[in-house]
Structures are given as structure tokens and as C-alpha cells.
Length: 474
Image (cartoon, rainbow, N blue to C red; front, side, top):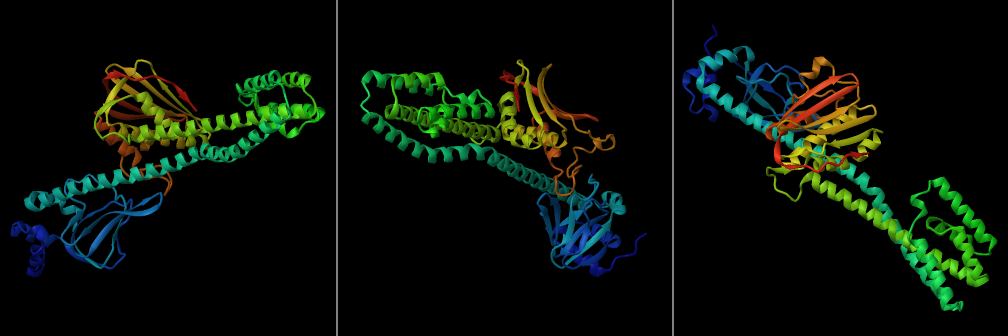
């Protein structure tokens, strides 16, 4: 039997706007079983990972919960005077997801967890308030979790995209600089060739050689060592015939052969041969730079298209048919640099009869990104994504050859904030959010794991269309 509460305590609790319509006897019941606690700024109420054991009613001040993310502690929610939180009736929370701290001098009314069952039985109105507070808290946590995971994914995407774009963008910038000098050299070589008084027939033979050389590139079929040997052989030939050995680099990357140069030397010698070789080499260099720039720009276009497809940036967040092959290819493209950095082979294999699925495309790509990123972190050498049509469903399996997930924690793997990674390395939200998004698409997600093979399986109801199968390996 609890001692009778003081009238002052009852009055103070009754003045809270939260309890405006609560019967007096319920407030007296609460006042008889709880106690005041005064907190200084920075005082810890509950530590992350601890089992919370009290209901909190904030009388004055402010308390906040911060969760340790990869970038450090981040405040995700706070409660001010007149609000209620902590352990609430019917709450399924097991451990505190973060540190709960008073951010200013604060006074709270605490009710120990052991009284919650009696609270639910004796105090209908207060219990109703607690349930509404719990639902609001769950919505806020979900919104904060999704936003945090989106920002984390955006950061990873931006880093991966910057890494992927760096090489082709640098190639475009470099070639643009070199192309200016190459065009000037081509113009100068053309003037010298015109001044050498070559006949129209001889000019046609030189033009034919340059056209033939520009139609192909030895660099695409030769190894770096073979290309170096070819350049050295061409330099020796040029030196023997009194021409500039500096032309060997441009000629080596073209389709020109020493037999072609011999045919040219049979027609010309001295300044005329040098002028002809210089004009051919300059033309080849310009063609080479244009080709490299086009290839690099194409790579940039491919990456931007993949990011556009991955984020569905030009589409509303609405349910529509999703081609799983394209969805997974876009995801693979934006994660390719991460796979290479970890020296992991990432393979996507889509069966030819896989149907489309009805879902929000951007959300589905978020699922694939979370699952594949986790697999890349765990893998020893390979991650394989397979898509199959099984009955009325499309089934996506993401498998890695890592050490596996211990049986004793497999049942907790989809819990929010649960992570097997070290502090600061993971948010513990990726799999929870993947599960939520799969459920929104009316699908299921489950796990099978043994040492050497872990498989996350996503099953989605088949739509009416067909996906375009195209295996991709990187």
C-alpha cells in the first residue's frame, strides 16, 4: 500500500496541460507511487544499451536522446515540460537506443517500471495519454531513422560517385588541354606539308594512310608492355629515316604499321617524308584525344544515368512497375567503386523470365543498396545477387562468402539500432529500414546464414510486366 501523496504534489501534477482532463483519483494514484528527481545540465538519465526502467514526466526543463552514428552522437528527439516518455505501458522497447541526457536544468516525475501494469489497470486516462505518446514517439523515431539512413546513404553515394567520376572527368579535362596543342600541331604540320610541293596523287596516298590509321587503335588490343615495345620499334624506324622520334607515341596508338611507313618512305624522303609523317601523326593524335574524350564522357553519362535511375530523381514516390534488372544494375553501378576498393567481385544475375514488381522504385533501390553494402562489408571475395521467378513471386537473393552471422544473434538482426559493427561504423538502421520498405511493397525478407555463406532473401509479389535480364559482373 502506497503512502498518501502530499496535496502539493497532486496539485502540481494536476496543473500540467497533459493532465487537464484526467480524473483526480488517477493523478493521486500516480502521485502516490512516483517521485521527483532534479537533474543538472548534462546529467545522464539512461545510457545507450541499458534497460530503461522508469516512466518520465517532465515537469520543467528539457531532456534529449542522442544516438551514436558513424559521425558521432546525433540528437534525434527531445522532450520538454509537460511531456511524457521513458518506459510506457505496452511498449516493446528492450534497450535504450541512445543516451538520454538533461540538456538544461530539469525536474522530472519518475514512475518505476514495476507499477506500469497497475497503471494500465487503475488509470485509464493516463494510460491512454501514454499510448498516444508512445505512438507519436514511434512515428518520430521512424521518421528520424529514415532521414538518418537516407543521409548516410547519400553520403556513401556521393563519395562513391565522386570516386567513379574522378577518372573520366580528369581524362576529359586533360584531353581538352592536350587537344588544343594537338590541333595547333596539326595546322602547323598541314602548312609544312602544303609547302613541300607534294603532288595530288602523293597527297591522296598520304591522306589514305592517315584515314586508315585513324580507323583503329592499337591501344585497345595491346597490353601496356606490347604498346611500349611497339612505340620503341616505331621510334627506331623514325630515327633510321632521319625523322622525329617524338612522333612514335602518336603513331603507336594508331593502326599504323611499320609496313605502312615503309610504303610512305618508298614515295618520299628527307623533308617531304618528315612532313608527311608529321601530318599523319598529328591527325592520329587528334583522333585519339577525341576518342578518349568521347569514351570518358560516355562513362560520365552512364554513371549519371545510373544515379538518376537509382534515386528515381525524375519520378514521384509512387507505386509503379519496377524492372528488377535495371534496378539492380543501377545499384551495382553506384556501388562498383566500393566493391573494387574491397577487392570483391560483385555479380548480378537476373533470370530471363523475371516479372516486374509493383513498388516505389527509389525505396526498392534503397533496400538493394543496404543489403549489398552489408554483403560487401562481410564478403571475403564475392557477392552474388540473383533474381528468379518463383511461383507468383520475384525472389532476390543477396549472398556473400563471409564468416556468417552467429545463430544467437540472427533473431535480432532486423532490430532497429542493432549492429554487429564496431561503434561509429554502422547506424544499426539499414536492415530495419530494408525490412520496413519491403513490407511496404507487400513483400517479405528473411535470412539464412552459415559460415562461408550468408543469404538475404527478398520475396516480392510479381507484377504484370517483364524485366529485362542482363547479367552484370564487376
